[in-house]
Length: 141
Image (cartoon, rainbow, N blue to C red; front, side, top):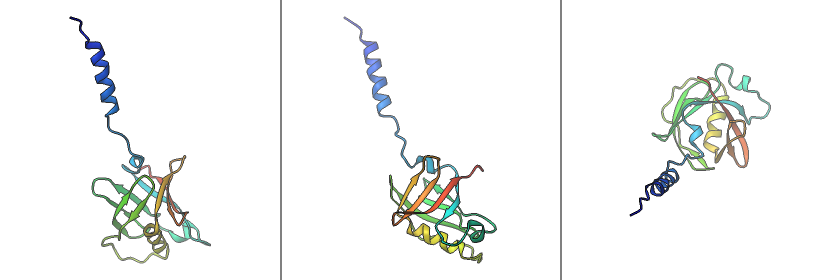
């Protein structure tokens, strides 16, 4: 009787490698915050819109929420995404400080976002009506 252990072992290893956890395209979104570096507001600069603090967003995979600040006030909102599409729900309770119009633009663009993509240089872009409205870079902290 011939032993075929080596052959079975190779088949088993191949099956296990094929059934391993597949990494989703969205996985790079998680585990860090994203800081806003571009907003599609004509005739205005990031420094004028957000003089004290740039908005940030953090995706929480388990809870299905994003958290962060919109340049002044903190926020938390539900989100859903797939390979290309994204949708943000209404932010929950927030502090109510007024810090200029930048915050309103930021929140409006978040609600308008329909698609997302990661660029070749690792930036996160949110897209509405076919145009990039918000672009973020990974934070180092």
